[in-house]
Length: 148
Image 1 (cartoon, rainbow, N blue to C red):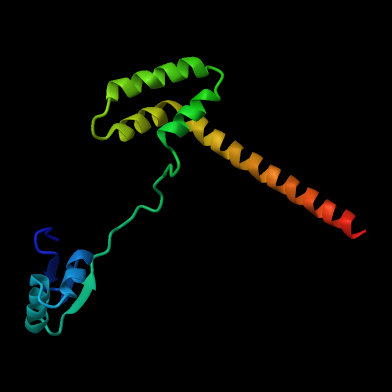
Image 2: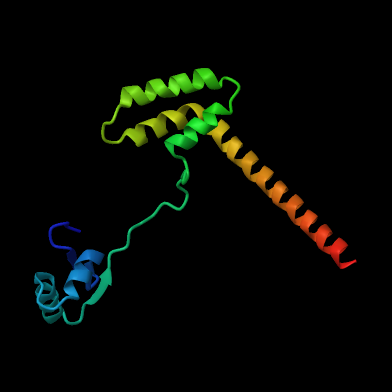
């Protein structure tokens, strides 16, 4: 699909594939996209019109809440926290304020601490669940004592 026009005509499958942006613009009367869409529908009346779908990798490993502050927090919990934080500061200084700073730091962090960070996350979740269960048990006991 070309980025310049927002649509693609597949003659073999008799399908016109449009981008979301093109479709939104084509829905506004008088826009150039509206005119193009009218022409496409006129010339290819028996063709099906569909939106372009973006293929997503469902198995992609993501780190949704991994911010620079979260990386520092994790490094501060380690036994060698002082040297780890010094090394982290060096990486930050080397990267500076250039474009893509976060991506470079994240790549360095995951290269060096990925397994430990994943284990840390699972421990955090397990601990939080345990604390929540204890809290619920205490509330249930206090409700039962109050009812008695």
